Image (tube, rainbow, N blue to C red; front, side, top):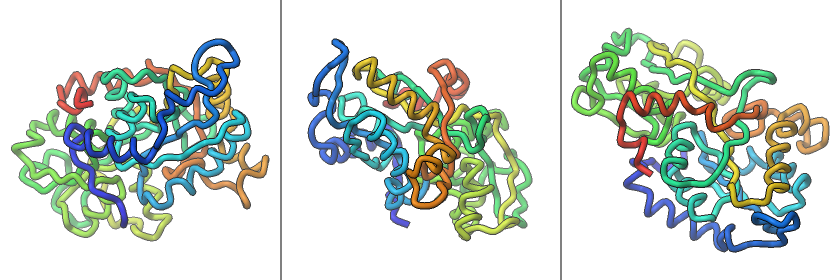
Length: 319
């Protein structure tokens, strides 16, 4: 696995952001192009950034049909920029280096808290017509004596990333509700990815851990890296608002409307397949295995803000 381990959002912000900004080259904010509608940026090139759910090497390949669709519908060149962590995406969009960003729910809230001027337009969905959302799982290896989250006390626990909603924030709230101090009562391990957290539990590197539901129930099983019955799910969170795609507010209204239309109405496996954006039938629109996207707005993330208020976690204001 080529993933680099993620550290706290605050600690990596400077280094990770510098890496991403250097990779992006010219600032999107300075690439003005022609503002045909009389207001806002209308650059010739748009930068689209995302953080991998699993293997960074396959990230652009996963998004390529959507990238091609964006180019066709907007008439712009789309430069895809993978990032090592959410802190890099936040800083890049805040400084005008990224026009379209694929966030996690918490990292989107962090971005807004830190002054990023961007609007969520859509969030990934696994099935057509569903509400964007997923759950965090608390998992143990089959046969473990740990039967509930209350049994996590005193154990080595795998998390994903301090800026991860399902891999850290919601689990922290659950631990607190179970009377467990997430710092003093367990040995926390940040693995850097949902896949890494699951596999670390399965291999015995951690006594228990947390990850998003689809990684446990589908993705790693489909890849042959996990078998049904290898793990037990001993805790499930409430529904978490789905990961949003946010568009820079500085873009022209016409361009933002075109991008929104792509994600809300066309970036799905049915449309992409029917219109020849995949060599065979499209299987997903991203590396998380989503069918497509559904429209969302800022209010949709009130639940994440509520959990932040409950946990008073420093990561909720780290960026």
